[in-house]
Image (cartoon, rainbow, N blue to C red; front, top):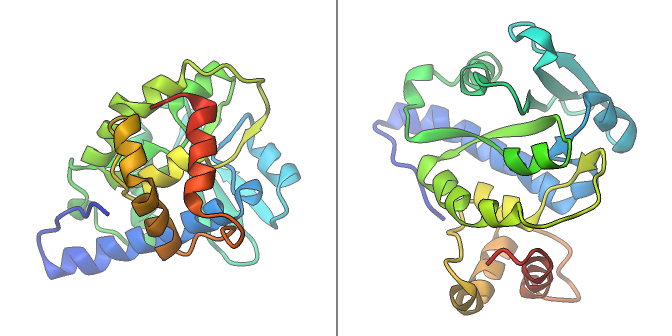
Length: 223
């Protein structure tokens, strides 16, 4: 897993506390994707189409209902969602981190990217309006954008009001290096699968992770 370098012990204790929290949240999404979508037409879709006790509130600091905070009533966990047309999403997401997780802004330099978990261009193509946000190393984000996320735009699917977490999103947010080619994927797929198992991804009791990875990449033709 690629690790972002931090300058001080204080940086590590504050910023990595959030990064670890975020990974645990996203792990829930990977294990129960039907309950943790990453792209929707409207926030109401999250309330009525998932089996979680959720509420949402539009971010009062963002005009025209261009962002909202989703809260799980039972656990208190929160997610930040931004409209795909919101240009200042980095500023507002970082404000969310400061207010909700006490991460000092000076600890998040330009090497960290605020990322749309669900590819923004693919969301626009399929009429999705809001996408869940996360914080990841910029190098990881750009490597996926240069290769796989551009290729996935070529895939034609039926449009729907809600999209779930995919293997491409899982690999990116968990810091797993992008497969550079089909050959690279074949050479590394068991290694990738072992990383997923080590991170406690479930659902692999009958078949290995590589089986599901094969099906995903074959379906989307993105390598």
